[in-house]
Amino acid sequence: MIKTSLLGDKPVNRIGFGAMQLAGPGVFGPPSDPEGARAVLRRAVDLGVDHIDTSQFYGPDVVNELIREALYPYPQHLKLVTKVGGRRDDAGGWLPAQSPAELRAGVEANLRTLQVERMDLVNLRLFDEHDAEGQLAEQLGALEDLRQEGKLDLIGISNASADTVRRALELVHIACVQNAYSVVNRGDEEGLALCEERGLAFVPFFPLGSAFAGGPRQLAADPAIAEVAARRGATPSQIALAWLLHRSERILLIPGTSSVEHLEENVAAGDIDLDEQDMQRLEDAVQLGDPMAAAEH
Ligand SMILES: NC(=O)c1ccc[n+]([C@@H]2O[C@H](COP(=O)([O-])OP(=O)(O)OC[C@H]3O[C@@H](n4cnc5c(N)ncnc54)[C@H](OP(=O)(O)O)[C@@H]3O)[C@@H](O)[C@H]2O)c1
Image (tube, rainbow, N blue to C red; front, side):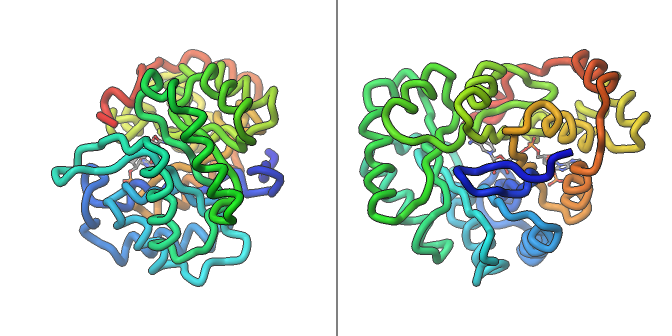
């Protein structure tokens, strides 16, 4: 199994960490055990994770603050990746914040809370592609301005159809696509194929089928996944992650967890070799549909 892949022109460990699960319930407010959350982050870095995905709107503020408290001063090769384009209301609702001014403010807020001068990558997180059509050039232009000001290194795009990614590629240099995709949600095969063709990183979110949709529990209940897990002496979550690693060399993982035990399990998925028979059997995994519908954001 190839252990590293490219984010822009820099190699990163293919198993990174998604920090969304470190906030309180509903990704809103602080976790019940902040020291436990910081311990997960420190253990991730100890295990070789050098790519952390976050957002100012996780909490809001909470997750970035935990990352800074746990890891600042940051290891030299750690890539901090964020996404802008959303905000939270007082009840934890997820709202769009898609104007160029809001995107700029979002990047500035990430720089401030993470205490860095430059983000390694900022994803434009689209909320409603139909609305975005008219302003994609302005939105990506705002991020490109920030790039030229030295406030970010790379631009990515998230929740984008393959057509939108193609349009984005005509406007600015795009380094990654972050879309929902997993062994139980293969709806974005076209986006993955496009990333392979154009040499972009594909960073699937909800790699375990989404906590919001009961994903990890459903992985265990799937006969194909359970069968391969038993054959490989691995857990269903590890098989879901190993499937992604085998599916394409352009895939970088950012599985999210609030538990050191699950983190260790997820990182160990990088050592699981799946053969053709395993991959063929996993073609039968039952598809669960779009987890974003359950996530309400
Ligand atoms: N761009 C976007 O719109 C977007 C949307 C959603 C997420 N994201 C990013 O993508 C990352 C990954 O998504 P996600 O965290 O929501 O993925 P996920 O597929 O929902 O997986 C996370 C869930 O799996 C559980 N889990 C993790 N490891 C496990 C293991 N080894 N065994 C059993 N259960 C396990 C976690 O619970 P425990 O905490 O108990 O382990 C949590 O409930 C996020 O952290 C975030 O950074 C981006």
